[in-house]
Length: 318
Length: 143
Image 1 (tube, each protein chain N blue to C red):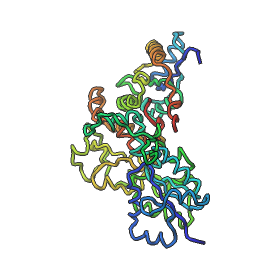
Image 2: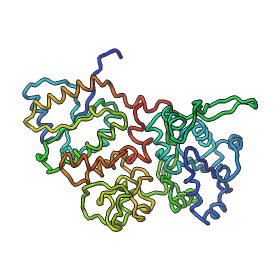
Image 3: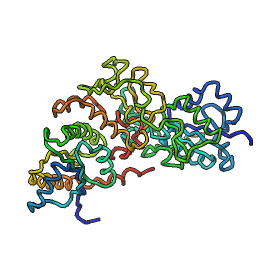
Image 4: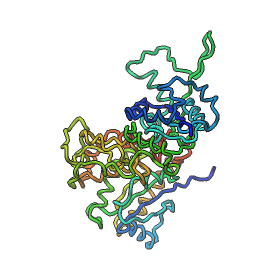
């Protein structure tokens, strides 16, 4: 058998997933011993035209990170799907929409208004906005258009496996690569490189059964190192989040942000977390409840930070 | 289209109070609009916010949640659980652009058939004014 052919691509993402691939450290040499990289814009100089020239299904495994924000993301996702035997949604953006997916909390029109006219640092008296096509003497320039909605990868192409996380932790990336190299892949549609249980199962903090009286934002409190953060009134997304990262954030005395997405059997991470948080509030007084929960300033942004696109509602109403 | 809009409201009613209250409204021959599709639950504390969100996403124009008055919960504090979830949920739904009036929490005891009928009346009328929610028609657009 020849070497495995691997492809990597980033759509709407920050680049963190690319770095998480390198986080496997020197093991990257082991990967190179059995695999060739045939496309990886962040690291290796290949062009789209090189991919277009490839035969269909000639890439063995494609690691696709990033959400589908613009027409180019969509185009490349479809192109790479056609050229790849196995398509992996790699990282939170491709799996759940992640931060780019929060674009669904607004509209393209509002994004343009904010970015090109309203931000305090913007001076734009001629009210110029980027156009998808623009003619200059040298020819026509083109920019990919923003799509009205941000999508996850599996909303535009067929996806074989999911590797969640923002970014996926190095160890889990290695687990996923090993599963691929050894050919021991789980059934199509599975989540690879993550746990099947909630984050709380791998968190070492103690649950004392306490409820909280008020909510603290992380900068307002130095939490106890041993006790469950949620019990201390810090919004920790653990109960509604898939484990697999090793509870990195709670170990550093910071609450879980929920980047591994909903744990299995949870359809909507935000709704579930809202439920878990509210139930842990120690009060039966309507006014007190309003005041305490009023400290969640942006429920949508807090509970759907990583999963708005993939949530049941999917986007805000236009 | 062209037909008069009839709101579709999902009603999650607790079996001990609100469901019995609805039953009383029926056996007392009180008239109220037939727009509420009742789902009996053991306690409002059993209602996961996911149920509400899913109802709205799958075609409901409103959701009514009704249970025992504070202090009267058969399971001691299930209704307080709901009150807490509802407090946060209604703010969340507003951020999604779903009007507050579409999801309503009401305390209705087993003896308050009249209150049940009145609540359904009010809610149906309010949602009739707001118009259909049609959640999923907007979602896939432009994808």
